[in-house]
Length: 89
Image (tube, rainbow, N blue to C red; front, side):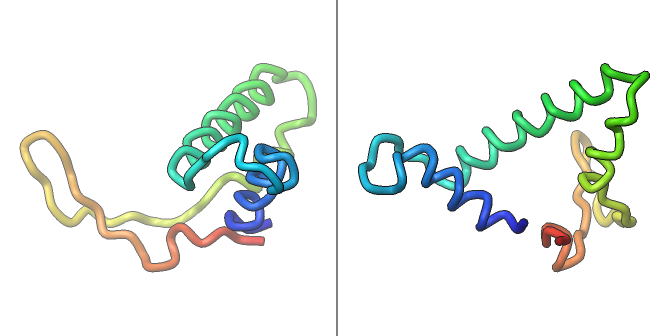
């Protein structure tokens, strides 16, 4: 499932099948809500250490290298690949 499909599904559920504009949620707010829910799910799975449910969070892992490009006094800038945020299906 790609991010746009998840966003459209969320809008349908939040707005009562997209017939009424009950809730106005832009993509930025949706991403924040989704990330919080995903983090809670990961924490819940990791708290149940004795069960085999960790397989549910393995698809969330992303592997790859990020090379450091610029270092400033209080922060560092990194160059990301163009397809870094592409969701694998």
